[in-house]
Structures are given as structure tokens and as C-alpha cells.
Length: 119
Image 1: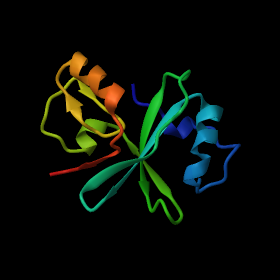
Image 2: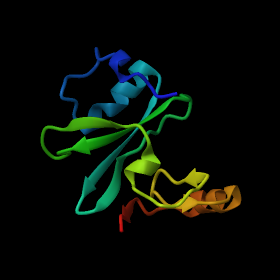
Image 3: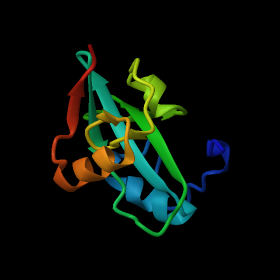
């Protein structure tokens, strides 16, 4: 189920929220947040949640990350990266897609790349 972002509590941060304050939103709302930036046909993960205890995850597109940031909810990460592959697993760090659980798990132990190029 898609997270209702209108219910996000905002008492611990100012708006617009700087990227370095996203962790405050995570804690206040008991959710994980990943933030991506899109530029020059490339998607880059610029913030990944370090919180392991929360189950809910939202993905955000950050507009103007170096100035006054604006955030847009990414409701479907696969559609956002515009892949034609139909896959079961996608690495949220580097956006690679895997058809098998085993390949995905192997990749997770080795992943360090946080940028992918959209064809």
C-alpha cells in the first residue's frame, strides 16, 4: 500500500527540509526514506535510510538538492527508472534489476555503485 504522505508529521523539521534533516522525518514518522536525484539521464541515490527497524519505506525524487530542495514521491521505483525488464528484485542502491533472488542477494553483498545511467 502506498504511504499517505499527507499524514507525515513535520514538527521536528523546517520546510523546505534540507537533505541532511530527512533522518528527523524518518524517526518522527516511523518510516524509512530513500532519496534519488535525476540529472543528465542518470539516477543517483543521494540519501539512503540507515534505519533498520521501520518497515514502511518511501522513495523520493529530490529536485534541486544543492539549493532549496523539493521532494516528489516516487510511487513506483521501477517505473521511475524506466526499465523494460520485468524483475522480482531491484537494488535500491545502484538500481540494478535481478530476475532471481539468489542473484539479488549475491549482488547486495558486493554492491558499492550508487549510480546508474538510463538508456
